[in-house]
Each structure stands twice: as structure tokens, then as C-alpha cells.
Amino acid sequence: MTVTIEKLENNEVKLNIEVESSVTSFEYDKACKKLAKRVNVPGFRQGKAPKNILEKYVGIAAIEREVLDSVLPTIFENTIEENKFDLVSAPAIESFEFADDKTLKVVAKFELKPEVKLDDYKGMAIEVEEYKNEENAIDQELERLADRFSTLNEITDRKTKSTDLVNIDFDGYVDGEEIKGGSAKNYVLDLGHSNFIAGFAEQLVDHSIGEEFKINVTFPSEYHDEKLKGKPAEFNIKINSIKEKVLHEINDELAKKVNPKFETLDALKEDIQKYLDNSVKVENEKRVANKIFDTLLENTNIDIQETMINREIQALMGEFKQRINMQGGNFDEMLEKEGHQKIYEQMKEEAVKRIKTSLIVGKIAQEEKITVTSEDIQKKIGDLANIYRTTTENIVAEIQKNVNLLHSINQQIITEKVTQLLIENAKVNYKK
Picture 1 (cartoon, rainbow, N blue to C red):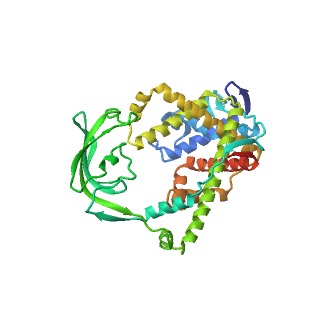
Picture 2 (picture 1 turned 180 degrees about the vertical axis):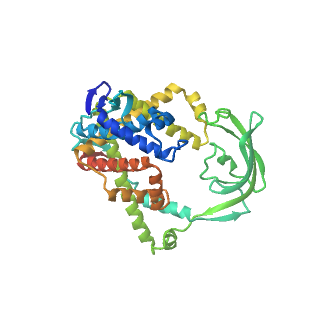
Picture 3 (picture 1 turned 90 degrees about the vertical axis):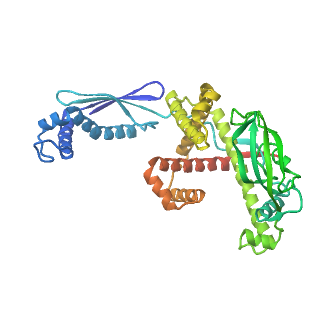
């Protein structure tokens, strides 16, 4: 057997493989026996059809394909290992030919990862704006908890205030036509925390139970519905009921409601402080990591082949389409509206950034001999179970169904380890 390696442009490698007839003849006979056991040839018991009959029944091409599937994987594996090739994609057979004596000639190609030449990535001097909690951060968190454990009192003797929750009926019109999805009965709206159109909630203040009135608003110029974008609208409103939010007093009782383990308000405050301190650490590490990778991306030139970029663009497009569809949008309409070329250029920029980041992480992991252990995977599975509020068994079951998920988990772990190494070795100057 001989394998001739030819390096082409765009990080592509061509293999010219020749396998002698003694090997292929043996594999050919083995393939015939295997196929004979899998197919039913009329007039013969399972697995007993002679080779010449089987060749006519299933076709010589099918048998030769079996030979390829048997011979080539080992050749590819050995060639890649011996030459320490770092592949982007699996080898693809361009052509093959069996001679009369069964000598096999194969031409195959595969892509290599682009070469990455890094400057010194340890001890990088970077400057980032330091994240700090506000001075009254604990008080703000306590107020949020007081709001979370608030009670609602029914109001009958006054008009609405900007902090009330109101039960309303409403229906809206634009240019005299009813807005699709712009009406509701017994809708509860928090006037102090409304995500309705600007000016909607404000105009519901100072009205009485049972009162019916009209309000006027204008849809934002960037509104998602083209028919309503920037249009003035009129809504008919009826106030059905008013409820007043009564905040829980910030005391030991609130602490116990948050978690029975907090017997006093001081214990809750101590826990909040730990949470806030950790938030500062996480945010600053995130800022440092972003700055490090931005610097590495800017200073590292990598010759990425277009085929890699195009595959990544297709993957990004798939993710984008899924996101749009999940949000109830129409992907094709969005493409038409934004423009195919504009979306493509945005996707290309993100694709290049993703590929470069992945290659840089891979190179550093290789240089530092960073690997993934079974303990790392078990911990990550546990983290994923917590995030998705499921069991580790369910995550493992998903991994068994989708091998790409395991690859993704491995990549996440490697990236996290490389990121931590870069952060620990960086010379950080925090701007105040």
C-alpha cells in the first residue's frame, strides 16, 4: 500500500492511495460473505449464495463500496496520526477505481485547520473599566425582595395611582381599524412596571373603578409590525378593579420568608453581600476575558479558508432562523426586510470571529497541554442540569442521543480552562 500526500492551497490536503490486489481481493471476498448474510438471494439459503450470483444480484459496485468502507478508515487514521494532521472535516473521497486485478486507487481530500501563530499570550497588559456595586446595593436588593413578598390590597375608595395594579378591558384602533391582538378583557397591568407602549400606563392614572375613557398613544418607529410602526393609535379603556401593592417590611420576618435558613435580617444581609461580591468578581473576570480575546483577535493573523467561513455562516444562519421562529417571527420576511447582503455580511463577520476564537483557544490548549477529564464532564453535566432544571440522567440521555452535544461540552470546558489561564496570567489595570 502506498499513500502520496500532496498539500494544496487553502489548507487542503490531497491523498493518492494505492492498495495492492492481495489486500483488496481478501477484503472483496470478505465483503461478499458479509453481504450474502444480509440479503435474500432467490433460490439460495441466507449467506449461501455464490460470489458470481451475488455480484449479479447486488452489483459489483455495492461490493466495492463495502471494500472501501473496510479499507479506507484505517488508512486515513494512520496517515493523519503519522503526519499529525489537524483536520477541520473528515476526508472526502473524490474518486476511486478498481483495476481488473482488484488493485485499488483512491483520491481523497480533506481540510486542515489554519496555522495559528500566537504572540506571548501570558502576562498580557490590559486595561478595563472596573465594575463595582453601587454603595446602596444591599438596600436595593432588600427593596427588591420587599417588593417580591408584597401583598395586594383591594381598593374601592380612590382613583388609580402610578404604583397600582389595575384590572382593565381595552381595545385599540389604528386608522379606524381594530388592531389585531390589540384588545383584552380583565387584563392585569402593573402601572409602575409596564412594558406597554410609552404613555399607555401613564394615562391610566387618576381614574375610578367602572370608568370608561379613551387614551391616545403612538407606536414606536422601530415597532416589529410594519402596519403599526410609528402610527398613532386610540384605545378604549375600562377600569374593572384597583389593587394597591403593600411592600413587605424589611425585617427578620422578610429574611425568613426569603429562606428559612435566615433567622435574622443581618443573616440575609450577609448572604446578599456574598452574592454581590461574587457578582463583582464574575463581571470583572468577564470584562478582562473579553478584553484579552479582543486583543488576541486583533493581533493574530490567521488565513482562514472560505469553505470554513461558509460552513460557519450556514450554522449561524440556522441558529438565527431558529431564534426568529421561536419568537414568532418570519425568517424569510426578516431577510427580505433587512436585506440578504446585509445579513450575510453580519454573519460573515461573526463567523470569522467565532472561527478565529476557536482556533486561538485550541492552539493555547495544545501549547499548555490542557485536557478534559471525566470529572470535568461530570461537573459540567451537573451545571447544565441546574441551569435547565432537570436531572443529570436526562442530560446524559441527551448526550447519548446526540454525539455533537458531548463535543460541545468538551469545547466549553476547554474554553473555560483557557480563559481562566489567560485571566490568571494577565496584568490588569482597572480604570476607576
